Length: 200
Ligand code: SF4
Image (cartoon, rainbow, N blue to C red; front, side):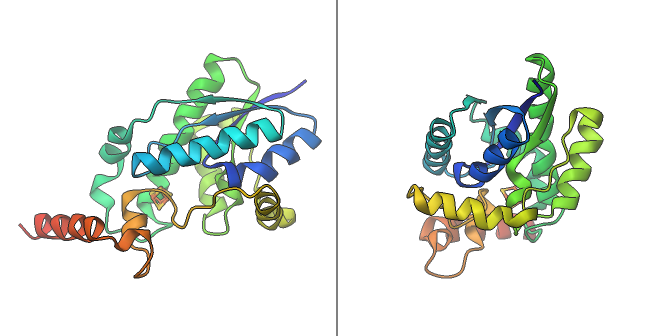
């Protein structure tokens, strides 16, 4: 049987991709590795939901360490980039490189990512990144096709799963509209500090 290590960005996004890969005959193991997520409490929430989805879909899940520093080191010069641009490409690359590393180490046939299920994410860029990093190891599935996003949301509603309101990193949180999580005083202060630092 073909084995696939599926990079999981969050439990909600993972639901449909897991079901689809299983239907296609893959033996799926999840890999939760997301050093981009801020703050840690949010990281823990998404990890917990991913574990719940793994249980509901009867797959194994393995977790990487929470290493926000490596994400900051990779993306710190791109804080003002809008979502879906250079910072996000680096963020995809970081997560997919680690997934490939584990894929080879644990001798999976291939790896894929749930990132392509979101309508807010550029599947073409994600797939190109996966292919350039992993070559034939990367399984280029665009999970938003065949109504993938709609299906994954339906499943999350059915099982009453927590759904986050921002992509994950500190910058995506700060740029939320007023009244959402990112507009807390601490976030606004963080954004102001960075602006001032940039002006110097
Ligand atoms: S907006 Fe999302 S994909 Fe882009 S850098 Fe932040 S966490 Fe990563």
